[in-house]
View: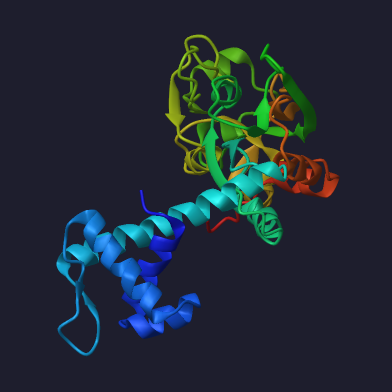
Length: 307
């Protein structure tokens, strides 16, 4: 293991190419630096410095040692920063998992605001679907989940608050056979046509699929954006977030249909583990409690007809 002085010596010699200039950089006498260089060679039993030329150069062995020294100095700097960061209450990393219905581009302004704190906390964003979002928090694959639906499950230390509600509309493509049917659609009518569903990402549970009737064929897609496009193009039917398809409904690419069994608004949650409340997590919770941001996240991006 090299000492901090030895690491600094190697870095100074590598960058200056001179014992004299290295000594000046380190604020030491040239004789002290020369002696320290010889002690390094003795310690490693290798010629580390080529003294035959005007400019001091590292031998191949010295170059390897200098490269490793530079890496060690960087690692030490990062370690020091991380230790100070943790000691001051900031997490080393914050893993945020959102339900796929929360579009990442709507979180980007919040990320920029967080970056302005200069906290050095590393953010990681991933997404899950339906049961998979709660499962990520339970299994330690998330520090914070955003947009989770269904009732909060039993998770040790679970804390949560409601982000808001999502309003739904049953919609079909303008050219779909159901588009011209009069009156509310019943279960038997719906069963005759394929439903489009977003695939549940749960790894351990059977998963959920909203809006599918027993015996009805289904097309599982990876996210809500894909579901909207699939229904817009007549590949199936189903419930869609009203705000995200407002333009498609207004333009006529999608047609709203009444159903005998309407779908209630869905409550969306923010949740975390109460035993892991660092400053970064608290900052994000404060942002997500703001009604304006919550409405924007749940409203989503309105997909224009040409999208």
